[in-house]
Image (tube, rainbow, N blue to C red):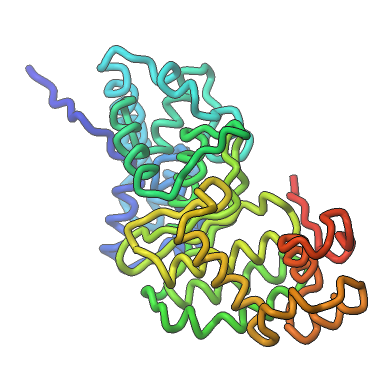
Length: 358
């Protein structure tokens, strides 16, 4: 008797998503009933988080079917994933050798397996691919569609950038967004500018996320793995949803807020089929210059950018200019440094500094 063996691996999260839609439930409702966060539900749906017995019991109570059904669904998925990945005669551990798996485990993006092979299989689930050719097709196309230019001065690995971008996709699916509305986003610029005066990320990040989501932009903050030097990225995930991904790479307010306004510029000014990677792209491209100008003009909308050339480079002048512009003093310092009017070692105490929680 022949046994049907599909050439695809469907995570149990696909069934979860179908049942949620059938019952008119949101992911956040499942998260509340499961006593988990929305990110955990998202990871389950993408096949990144294993469906444990606890999950099986919860899904049985909320969506129906037995716990045994859900556990068998997980077992079938992992079995299919292993079979397909191994069928082509190449080990995932080999063709994923350039992918920063250790960092992905450390950042909590994938589970550490009992062997290098198992960890690589978990990475296959994360990326939604089963062969080296499918990985290259999916992410080479993404890179080709972007303004990506690897700098010779730094060790940048496309596979690391791909991992960071994929994490953005997964995390963005947990963000509840209104449909894309460029007019509303443009009208929100003043409110975003006012947020620069708040030094605590625990305060300004949820507010920024809500402002952007109301305009159809899912904001995701994700640390970068080794080999990815991106500070920000923007792209459209579909016709109704854009993604703004931020890394807090420089851990300072001047860089962070300039990146936010720069990425908003890309969303409002440039083609919707492109991917823009801040920190990796060709800084001399026309699109990047336009996004830089957009950021500068909107950060200093109340006073005009000309003041950066005329204001005395003194502490009193910087504080006065920041107050008149309605922005944090660190942003003024950063722009005066950027245009060469203030040495990079001066006035850095005015910048708000951030750190990652362990």
